[in-house]
Length: 113
Image 1 (spheres, one colour):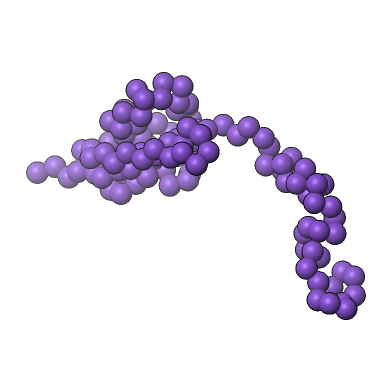
Image 2 (cartoon, rainbow, N blue to C red):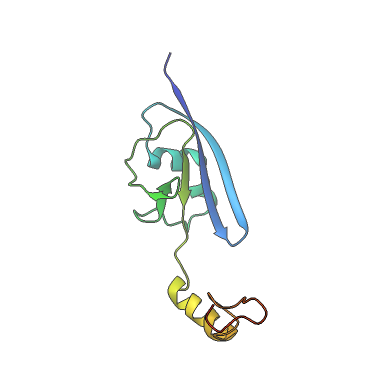
């Protein structure tokens, strides 16, 4: 009797829209085989599965990486905005006094404490 792996393949084509597919694979299966078995490649032909856009449990994984039981294969969309730039813009909109470390002070406290 060969061991089987239960794997979840997840893809979010848009914000707040996640598609998860549970697949059962033979032992020794790879990330690429899990993606093919999930059927997500057929449903979303524009899905990018190049190295750097696919991972297992939030860590980058090459297509030939073997899977373990109960792994979660994730396909990530490319970032639209650099996170550092987005944070900088949010901080600028809020103003220096309304955001950051000194945003909430005790009443009557000195500035900076």
